[in-house]
Length: 466
Image (tube, one colour):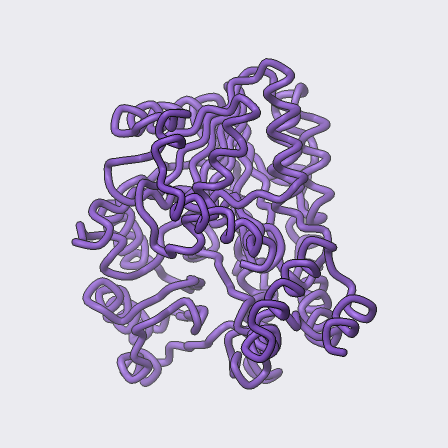
């Protein structure tokens, strides 16, 4: 009866439906419980509330369009990207931003140092949003500094995903709250178990300081991201520090996430003080579009952005991702790219942080190899970088992985950049990582045990609901 309800009443992908039917078939009673917590999805009311809040907050964009500054529009500096930029703008109805200065950060300690340095200089506000914000030694460095800034009168707002922040001790926020700081957990992680929505995470990692400087990428706030641990070794990730108008789009994204997570009387308005309205920095020339997506919207904007970049490539598509669990759309995109003569390389970790998901990653690595894609296994530590490099000019960095969860279930944000120098620098890091990687070969696949292959194929069956 429950399976019939699932098939005929719930609107979802056929692959997802069949995956849940497999769960019911093999573990019927436990499967029912798992479905309640992981399969129900957001209610219509929750979807509406999130969409409505985004619309309200992004109305502030009307106040920052100033033709004399030439910071926001839909026209890229290089006309050859006109169609691509138009497509990206339509995904979230947000503009392309000009005159951004971008610094690439690939080391956890340097990213933390840079972030703390910018927080120290904050004069008006600090808005922070992380999937994982843990109150360990690293987290407390940030909390203690935020407390100092709050005492100085700086507005401090910290939003985190409670389910992703394992090990957080809320009591350690007491001094920050006493100093005037505001702490909130993301809407979907509030009473997640009671409301059967433990499968929906705020996976974004963004910081906005004084409306001028912002951060976006893959690093969270916890010891494992800045230290060499026994479990993971060196943590290899990619983050961006942005000084420019793209900061405004990230700020509006933060405001929407914050406002949908707090009571009415605690909402933040889209004040002009929050947004970037400086004179353009003529020496900064990176064009950036922020693409965001979440389960509240069925468009799957992040996946469409990936698909467009992969199928538009003429020379190369180089990807780094800790999880490789693509759906049929992305798999077809890889086929199209390879059949068009594009150099497609994908780099994945050599170890799991989630064993079952890693088996699915191993399976799909073998699938894309059949299309001619070169797969490399990073041996220099744990690869958590989420990067796509297209040709010589376009690249994307953010929180989204190449997996179904990032396409459909998580709240994600990534930065699409049109800049040859940024593309070249990311390609440099990719080449550097290749020197610490092993290319996956057919012989390696043939040498895998029957038991390992069985686990990989089993994980693949459940990949649509991971």
